[in-house]
Image (cartoon, rainbow, N blue to C red; front, side):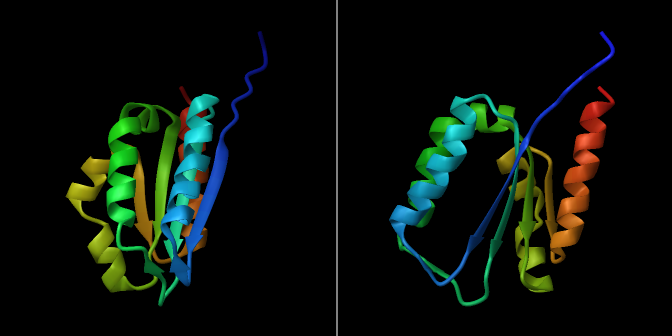
Length: 128
């Protein structure tokens, strides 16, 4: 056959203002919907300066990730974190976070760099 079609979703989440526990759950439900439908995806996340999160957001995220870790790693083809500063970039771009996510992971302060990186990931996938 002389045609190959590959499809992946690109999901971008921008956390701003006061992010509630329900909004965290909604975000995770959206990611879970991609997993349930076996849809490969790239995820871009950024947090606007001044954003705040509900006190239990880390626990909610940790429980979800523990339940969905193998599937997340199967369908998430790349994770981009857009940092709002060099200090945040340094905080997010650690070997421990790379290992914890278990998927190709880029931290940058430039959203355009993140999109280019996703393009590169798609090209590499096409080569296989």
